[in-house]
Amino acid sequence: RKEVEQDPGPFNVPEGATVAFNCTYSNSASQSFFWYRQDCRKEPKLLMSVYSSGNEDGRFTAQLNRASQYISLLIRDSKLSDSATYLCVVNVAGANNLFFGTGTRLTVIP
Amino acid sequence: DADVTQTPRNRITKTGKRIMLECSQTKGHDRMYWYRQDPGLGLRLIYYSFDVKDINKGEISDGYSVSRQAQAKFSLSLESAIPNQTALYFCATSKQGRGNQPQHFGDGTRLSIL
Image 1: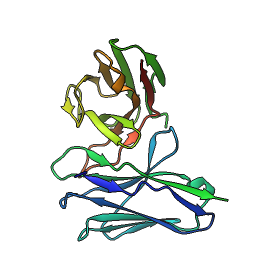
Image 2: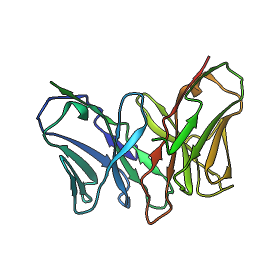
Image 3: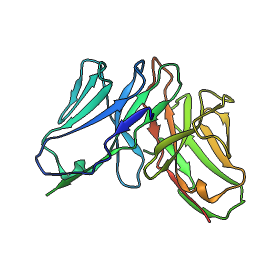
Image 4: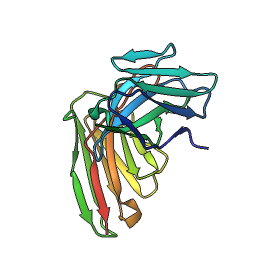
């Protein structure tokens, strides 16, 4: 079983729409959670960390559900510039590295 | 992000050649990582280092070696390249700290083995 699993999409949404992605992780002792954004043929860039109580950064909201072992990313008022692949990233307790999901592709349509 | 620089950006070479990919950083981070990315497989960790001369195997280290002779530099070598090592390679850095700190990536090296 993969450490991190995401729906690959693609998600095609109109401008202004709200879209949500989920990501499940397999290790219940995981402690650190992040969402990264990756544009085509570019490097992944940190979008936001995910905190236990949930957190918001402008139009982006991240949630953590430890009981069900998933994290989510909500994007409100989608912009064309939000088109990218969103990577879910989780650590594994006792491991010294992060595990990356394969990404969910989002296309925002005019 | 010019704070993490990878060279070369693109490389095409033949099977059996020895190749070195370089990574340098100005972020002052202790930890450095090498990943490869393949379509449908996501990012997979090859090697990582938490300090000078500290080397640790990742998920897919076979066929690769690394060197960390200075805090700012972490190089990846393919001793005898084979076609299934064709991929996009990323170097990343992170701070030392509680839990796992977020990682910061270089621009990537696109490597093709013919």
